[in-house]
Image 1 (tube, protein in one colour):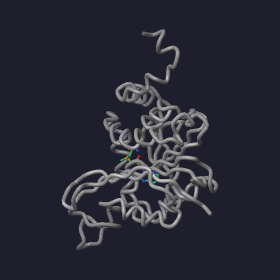
Image 2 (cartoon, rainbow, N blue to C red):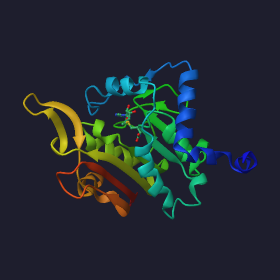
Image 3 (cartoon, protein in one colour):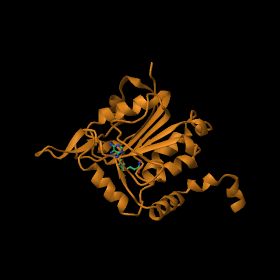
Image 4 (tube, rainbow, N blue to C red):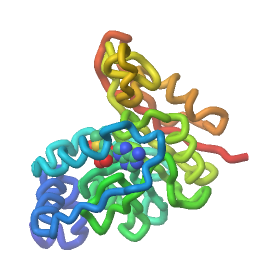
Length: 242
Ligand SMILES: C[S@@+](CC[C@H](N)C(=O)[O-])C[C@H]1O[C@@H](n2cnc3c(N)ncnc32)[C@H](O)[C@@H]1O
């Protein structure tokens, strides 16, 4: 068994529990010093840093399954299958190293993976803000935003930034959860006092509208079957810059 694994050690990271174990061990055995991005754009949802800090410090790294739903279809695509080792990929909002380890598992080279979050205790995750990405135009072949867009009160800017840093014919992958009853677009949890909680979308069409005319081709899409149903909204699409 070990001999088989030695041929391609990254295969062990195909197991979600192994990714969780490794990421959690690195977090627990590190200094747990949390870097927090300070120059927050107006689009950062109020309370986003505090909420995610609490989630990280819960110390259980429970949810590796969401991002799997987005990375699995992504890696089936012909432009990625077999080409991943040479592609530059950006993970926006990974929170823990689990998403990065999954990208390694499916063939992306560690040196070609960048990651950015408002908070980070990992040398693999830069601190930064999705509304103001510190990367040049067309820097990445793949840009992933896995369950992050909901934390934006300026989702148009967040998507514009994803598209900007994505190469011509590059791929963006977006996933979020729709929860009926919260409204659509930039939403407030209590409409009476206008307290913004972020953004909420229930259909791929709404995400396509945010991407706008730079959307070239849709590879994969998923949404709840009806407006009163909770469920994932996912879009994987090719971007054009001409
Ligand atoms: C729900 S977690 C998603 C974790 C992982 N991507 C997944 O799919 O399970 C959302 C992450 O997005 C980060 N985030 C929220 N707003 C952000 C922003 N403006 N810029 C960068 N990261 C942000 C949070 O700090 C958190 O780590």
